[in-house]
Image (cartoon, rainbow, N blue to C red; front, side, top):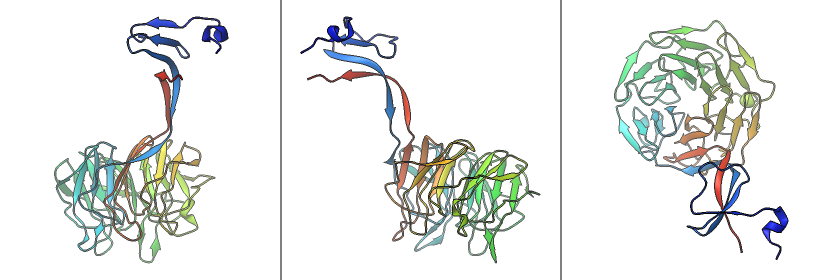
Length: 330
């Protein structure tokens, strides 16, 4: 066997404890643990993992907002039971029931955080213009949307939100409204492509809206800069509606949806184009809720095609960084 010193031309440092400030590529022998170690760049692949189940399995675009460890899910549809007022909080481990919506509905939109949320639009049993704010425990009715609609999407925060697209007889909408914290105003500039059952995320002045129906617009991606909507030259790799998603205008993630069959496909957005992730949902479904960021997302609820789901999944994005690693020898 050739000695390491013969290959590298240097000795291995023997220490009783790991160096406090190692440099990349450094190798040493820890005499206390009797292990050979180095300091290297470690790449962690993206993955979905199971989280705590919802208390109420639900589908048809339940409202959602917040982060992976502090999310809020509200409304939706169950059978039997119909349109829901049920609201649940997620703490990173489990869901807890909290104050109910004033108006039961499905196909609604949400914005904000777990303790400062906004719910608007939806269906139940007619197209809804209702808007409600949440303070962490109670929902309060606020001024309504100008255009009642179902299947719309939301972006922003509780005091500065967007209501995007949706449908009302006889079809999909291009209409967009802005929320000031006290009233809804119809934007003079609408979406380029009318659609519903897409997903939006970002802020009131820097949003992204993607997917939806009717086909063939289910791959469409549009950016909002606070003044105008711009259609992105490239769209989703897997066209779909009823998808979940979260993130910012430059770093987003979408997952699940219907193509028209339910899918587990996950795609990442870098501000310019979508990339299909090798990590896919464990449970294929549409009409699910989404919260969090591109690298720490949450997907919950939805319709598997045969049943309404209470499943929650947590996404950890691809990452890399310098770490101390034990070298296995034989």
